[in-house]
Image (tube, rainbow, N blue to C red; front, side):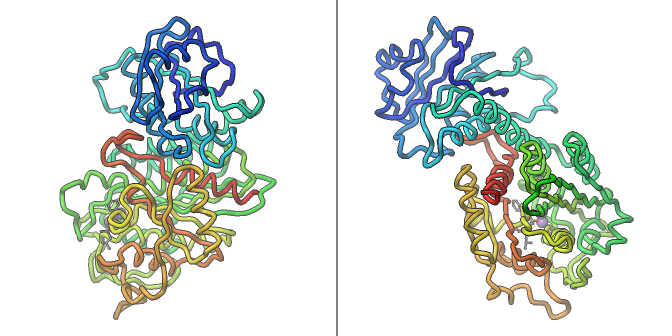
Length: 486
Ligand code: BES
Ligand code: MN
Ligand code: ZN
């Protein structure tokens, strides 16, 4: 959905005006034609489950949507309302809509609220459908939306908010499109091509390494996982280096384009979801895109290791001992613990660049999903200050992170008799032992691992979004980078 932020739009040409109102504060949008009357006639009170549509003369239709208590407003709640708006507008074939959102969310100011709402509104009608050949809604043109935000900034600021929200929403969309693409299309080669396309659009540098170069760099982890595959591996480096850069942040992503488990093969049920195992890689591409479009004065290096994980006669197998790029050795006990193998090399590569911070994004463990479900990503870092900053950044954009331990006390889980470590610590504490494995390859004063296995994709449609890739990682990281600049 194309969104512009405008405090004083002409509503007479709008198909459908949506007004979001909080309980007991339904007077907040009285200035708009027809709204007072609609509230009165519908006895509308703003409860969170309330909605009413009336036919009108200015805009053709007015829909009032209840937000519940204003003090209890959250971004997640607002997102549900925006998603409901998009569904209604699609169903009713509205070509142009306006959305009145007259409140500030939490402790943000009007401009921050407007940016978040505009960003989520643009993504609210997202649907991945390039492979639907018989489209039910063929005639439907794109919806264009005007967001009427809470008062508190001028028109010039509105323009800035417009383009910032667009940068972030487009970054999120890149992640969703890449994530939703099927594994036979979004191969490691294709991930490299997408990264290159994005880089050339941004005018930034992108290097894509193939098998030969990966061999020359001795990335034993990536090569081991790739041994079962008919696809070539890729190692991708995106570089956004603005002149006024204050800090250097490396973003590392897991790019498993399909995870069958390999020789330690997964059960068939839901195996199709493992096409999403490259969502960490996609998050890196989307975040670099958004940051560059925003022109953030932070140097970013996006680092992606990519392969699929399949069984074959040449596949790596339990009992194998692999020498990683760093020189450390790993005894394979489960080929399904492949993400950490490719990330071990990617994190070592990132460490050699000596960035100020390293953040990695990975759909790494089922154990993290068992612990947190889909409402929060797991955050693992030994650095309290970084943890604090990331959690706050997540809170500010409605993308929750929850810290889990990476204490060395758990290291026994991955101790090996035959090599420096094992690649799996078993079921108990599985998300933590995975993080501890990664830690072995990090040499950086400030590193955090984000396990996005539960947040990267929605198994089913929910109140806030369509089924499939969510774009997890982009918004929280942009908010974090912005916090570094304050
Ligand atoms: N990609 C999976 C993790 C995953 C599971 C992501 C469910 C999203 C939903 C990862 O490669 C994996 O298979 N992890 C294993 C590790 C185990 C073998 C130590 C897991 O979580 O079971
Ligand atoms: Mn796996
Ligand atoms: Zn995996």
